[in-house]
Amino acid sequence: MHTLDQCSSNFESLKKLFPNCITEIVNENGDMRNVIDFDLLRQELSDDIVEADKERYRLDWVGKKEAILAANMPIKKTLRPSRDQSINFDSTQNLFIEGDNLEVLKTLQESYLNKVDVIYIDPPYNTGRNIIYKNDYSISEKDYLLKSQDIDEEGNIYFTNKESNGRFHSDWLSMIYSRLKLAKNLLKENGVLICAIDENEQPTLSILLKEIFNEGSYEHHCITIVHNPRGIQGTNFSYTHEFAIFVVPKGKKRIANRKIEDEDVDWSNLRNWGSESERTDAKNCFYPIVINKDSLEIIDFGDVCPDDFHPKFNEIFDNHIYIYPIDRSGIERKWRYARQSVESIKSMLKVKKTKEGYDIQIGKNFGLYKTVWNDTRYDANEYGTKIVNSLVENSSFTYPKSLWTVYDCIYAGCADNKDALVLDFFAGSSTTAHATYELNKQDNGNRKFIMIQVPAEIPEENKKLISGFQTIADISRERIRKAAKNYENLVSDIGVRALYLDDTCFKDVFYLPDVYKQSDLVDLASNIKEDRTSEDLLFQVMLDWGLELSLPIERKTIAGKQVFYVAGNSLVACFDDLTFDVVDEVAKDHPLRFVSAEKAIHLDHDKTNIKERFKQLSPDTEVKFL
Image 1 (cartoon, helix red, strand yellow):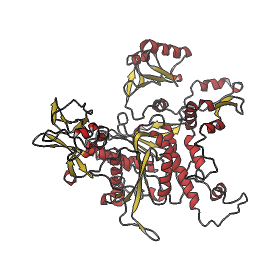
Image 2: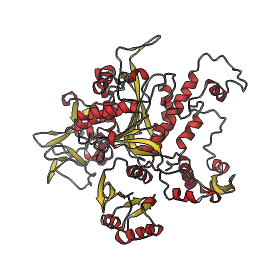
Image 3: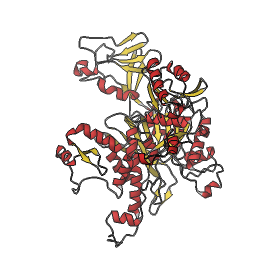
């Protein structure tokens, strides 16, 4: 399997926009290929071109071009399941994926394109030490100086270089840039990105995020969080805080209001009063607000009423009450906000029962999150380190995030969406998974998570304290398992489906016709690697077809063969010897897709016959052989 080729995708987009800029050339192998004529493209964009040597506002560093290339380069990787490290493997919708997050993000590009509601990440802070997420970004001091043109080829330094901070800034920026570019593809149009960071890279990360998530489409908010009230000793100051950068769609109310008690809110009527408050002053502000008669919950906002329609103050239809902005004297007034705007402030509204009927009230300063978070619950030691150690004794994590810091970040991003999908591709100790469980417990939600963690080795000195764990990913999974036990019977899905990154399931074999041997033909009968199981192949197929890896899986035995059903009849797979008895039985379920392997059929014509059989019995089924 090759992951999505971002360069090819970009090429196809330009091809659609500027077909006249596509031309043909002969490559070094003598083959014709389509390419972009950049001279023509520059003419098409002549008013918007910035010459390479012209000054402009941007963030540059040594290695940026390589980081862009790394994000776009396809890879031949897959994700393999690990049942023994999972909880409720077949039914859970939560994922834990072990592997380098750059490569894992590439494998998820098609299955999770525009499907993630909230991304929360706490990337490794730039301490100047080596980065475990290297991807060939970490460069020597000499290479850095050469690329930045601070020394010549003979090693002569143009200025006195007393420290190598710039090199480590470049390494870190290259590491985070390529990952954020890929992550953006997974985020929904109305999704929220939250990135924790310290003072070392906060300024550069802010600029980098504005490049990837441009300010024309996104708002960027930098929140200060007091996470260590005791302070970390510095040369001149004792640091007590870090930052969280929120990136949200521009002009939309996407951050939920924080939880506060009803009595702490200053409530007032949503209906206007006084001068210029009548219906005729703003006709688009006269419409019904629909509530449930029993729960008094706001369930809908009706259309703007025509001029000749004059309703009562409250009108009841079935189990719904329609509330209009009509005062006690029967004067038709207006709501403060137009119909197209009111839905965005729904969380700030409540229904009040009065002697005359029902009114709609709005809360002033209704729990808006402030830009400084200072609360004892954000203490990284009390609610981070101690919580992790209570679940995984002597864990090697230094200052994991407070559970409540991450909880509030996720709450802010998806409190209004109980089915949200949360992604953390720097999972660490999986505080994000724990916080998602907690949020689901609080509001009976069904949010799902995807945790991604590189299998970084635990330092030797810590291995002596933690028996049975070799990597950070091991501890991360264990924290999820232990935390999940605390939510049994409190959360609908406490499971996790464990996967790990590996090379593709298919052999990478290329032969020229004149070097074929008879013995090679036997090997070519199957292009699947010998160590791969049927379930490995199933997940490879799910990635190839762009299916979510959290879909429920049912294993059936049909005519003595193992058959997988994914999400009902969305995908059916059989990698055992395929017989017509199996085909006939599967076809009765009319699957959308059916997949098997070349090795599962004995004769070439059987493959054709099987496809014809499906055409007869289930003509809409897409049939594929690996």
